[in-house]
Image (cartoon, rainbow, N blue to C red; front, side, top):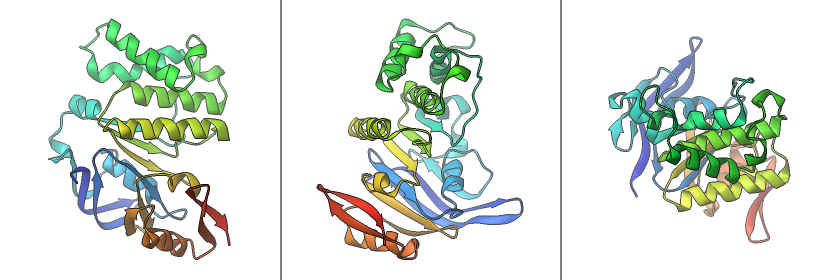
Length: 253
């Protein structure tokens, strides 16, 4: 299976402290991969390095091409990012925030095209944010704001979607909506990479990458017993992975 993103000998230091150490990783194209691990394991740092948002040693390749060889505009068309606790311009309308996702596709200083407007409407409808399109971002609750930022990500129509803690502030029904949306995007051939604290939700992914101590401890399908055993081990066997209603769930031990 081809890799949409790959890294070789990836190391990252933050504040002089090593956070990631010599990582080799291939993330398959057209699949949903969830990155999991304990607090401070290096999950978010890894995702930022994949997005080119952090200085690092080693090589990151996007769609089999070194990340640094992509122009900023081309990379923004092919790779979309949703960060953790991401700030936004609170005075912008929901519509304008989602339209930011179309900037990589628009000529400099050009007005949005009819196609841009259609894509943004579809993205807002997909995240159930369309009714608030004229409201200011700053007037929304945390969960509503997160759904608008998710719409902005979708509006890019990128090949690769990176999401760091996308379920933040979402209530259970909207977490379920997010799960269905993520599966839909992977089903359309897009590559989705998420960092999740919600282990039960992460187990719905096609593959898991288990990170601890700045290193990859395991990578494999969630359905593989070895993956589930590695997941329990990295959390010091304080959780158990069990089957319930034809899916895997994590429960306290």
